[in-house]
Image 1 (cartoon, helix red, strand yellow):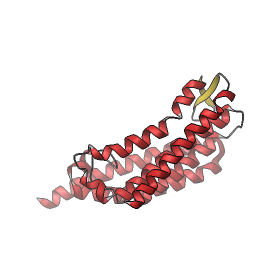
Image 2 (cartoon, one colour; image 1 turned 90 degrees about the vertical axis):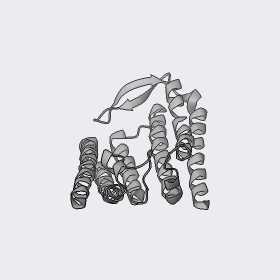
Image 3 (cartoon, one colour; image 1 turned 180 degrees about the vertical axis):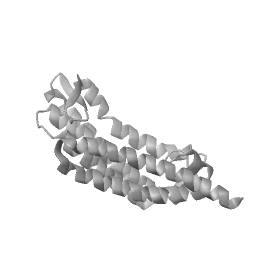
Length: 216
């Protein structure tokens, strides 16, 4: 419980700091700020600075929502078994969302950061971190690799999350290394992510079929 509280406090502090930094910087922002980047890493949509400020509230909202979800999950007992891993994964999510927000803020203030390089790096570290704790997540309805087959079988859930954790780490490491591919970094990032999701999804299906055939 102490570890859970520590990670919750860390997530909460990061979310609050992200919001405070945006509130302080708000008066210095131009009326139009970049809010979305395309696959090339170039800005493809601008919005008002009010829209950007609204997005800076997202990390705080996620901290509250993600910590509330276990209380309404029919399998809430699972969260007692993986509370530390779940709290750490929430922290990873908040770091990712806050990082993207602050990078956008930096660009809006004129401190240009190459989004096509930093974005894969952030997500690479995110997936590597998540992969390290994926195998600890027990069956539930809100978090983890929720395919029809993992939800139908605890055995398939455990096997898929153990395998998925390894895949996430590999995907994360490839995404981190993609920063050395320049303008192709975002393409490599998206392709790797897509392949990783498909591989894990298919794995859960085949494990389910294999397990059912063995029972006959």
